[in-house]
Image (cartoon, rainbow, N blue to C red; front, side, top):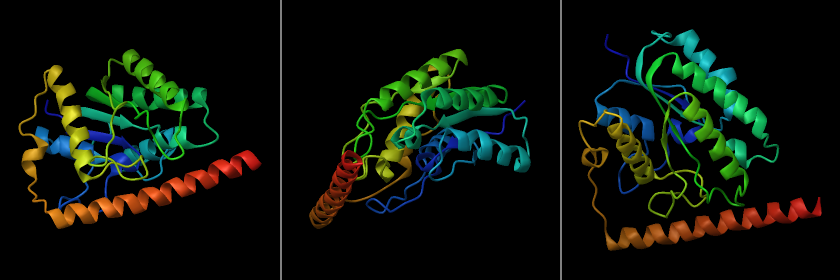
Length: 236
């Protein structure tokens, strides 16, 4: 029986959207992945979401609106935790409970589940030791459900990541999709086309200089805000 394609839950990274990069639209990594696989795409990811939002809002929305709430889907995607570890009220046990509930939900509807780890150099100020803690939870729960894991621990760089060190650029989203497709290929699901082959762009010296200046300006603002938060936390 044919499935219904790719189903995705998560935050703004999976929701996608944002400014162009050399004329290439910023689309979700999961959407690029679905396009490369030649599968329909369904997403309930929302900006700013944390693990409780997947369980309490996105899954109920899916159950209430989906044409096929029981599936099956070829691939279920779950990428959540970036906003959780960046919050001061990080609760590892609560995160694990919600992540496990979401994973179990996908396990009952998807032929394969795909999840991703969190970059270690996350945010400004950096999320720090909370990230390895969350990644341990992601990998442990994924193993319990036989899910595939895309390792993004070392993901970063100006080409792929915005100045906030949180959100991928348009090229970053494609790069994540390529990594996800490589993991799926090892499990017997090769892509029909490479996502990079679906875009075309041309760089210029003037555009590169302008982009570097804009990035430096934005990075300075991010660092100044991070310093202010750090000083406020110490004073409090």
